[in-house]
Image (tube, rainbow, N blue to C red; front, side, top):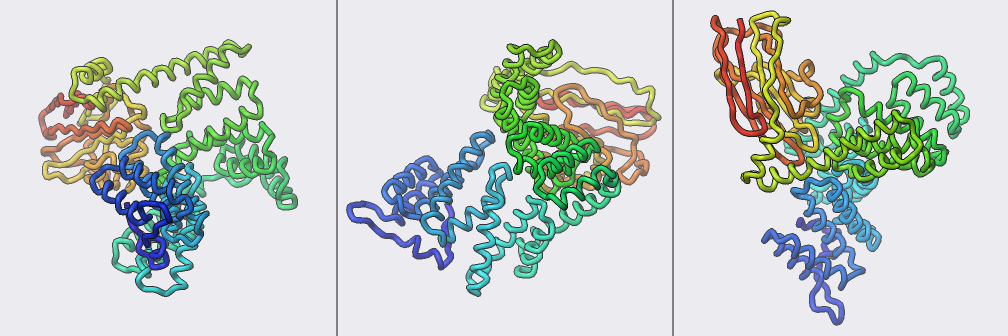
Length: 551
């Protein structure tokens, strides 16, 4: 648990005792810190919860309580539980600032956490407000002792605005960091973020060239909207026009405005949900390089909109089917599987068409398949060395298939492997080539998130270190899952040149989440005048790897 050293809040940390109470606030904090030093978080929390009971009007107590609740997030994998912890944590800091709006410690931590947690936690804008407050006060104080806190505030403000895609504001604060602390780690991180922003803007410019110009209908609707900016009918029509043009980002913007004005129009929410769903289904969006929560936020936004639509039209079976399917398809951390099952059963019990009922049955099967997998995931996660864990791998390990290679121009290298495990989410996987000296030659395949998250990606450490993300645009594809996979290397390096004869190594790396299972396998093969084959059979996640050089 960190202690804040700003002189403006020193008085808040000074011990005091109320009549009839045995411990001061400072003593409770020190006791909780001692338990935390012993890795006894539960006892530390119990100690501060007692302090809250004895000092319900102490802003300092609520500040420290929030920090301790936040410690619970470390190592947690269940997003639904993480969200609960976030709620408790921010509630403590909200209470602290309600009691004392000038509590800089509470405001700094609420701001820093607010811009750091995913946007679906609903704290980003509040965090930015807190950090701007901190920055202004420190700037006006002119105290050099507080310079590091000012730099941190600038850094977090850059992160917050970057997350909101307010690019110019993000640039402004990163530039302040570099000016205030040249050569520091803060400056290096700020410069890295500026580089990512530049890359995003380049992508955005190229992407914009491919976007079709506004149609006459859209231009006409925009003119009407300029005259009546709060006209929900025009906003809905404009959202529909952009959706028809498959420009879903613009559709979402106008439909969200329409929903704010006309909050009881189910058609607005229906179209907004459709646009969000299509937006989530689009291929790579460079925004994920600036905000790794981008797609996660889309998932929560879609479910929120579907909830509102169902609330407005609870007997609409089409909406129930839609929300049911979405609830089943969502990653487990969205926490909508049970709701999805209930919606699908409602469809089955209704007068829906045979096709709708058949679809509901299919997705119920998917839902219960996901539920059943959670037990196997728990087995291999918590009891990885047990016979039962091995039974899980044996049960789901697929058979090796074969491929028809007649269509490929030889010589080639055939990379044939099996992914032998299925988690809640498809794994992050990479296949790449290195020469005998360990120099990176080419990425053959990398799953979408691994490639596009770039520097933020940490689940594939060996591939990311070897490739440095320089060769991903042409080889990144949707995440592969349990089963047999074959890739063909045409013996060209990342620049398109044929490699020389010699020894090469094929690497396959896979990382699963939330089970945190990880494996990397490699197979060496000689490329030359004779055909060669190497087979590696080890582990459970990649139980089979065959590399074959064919003349």
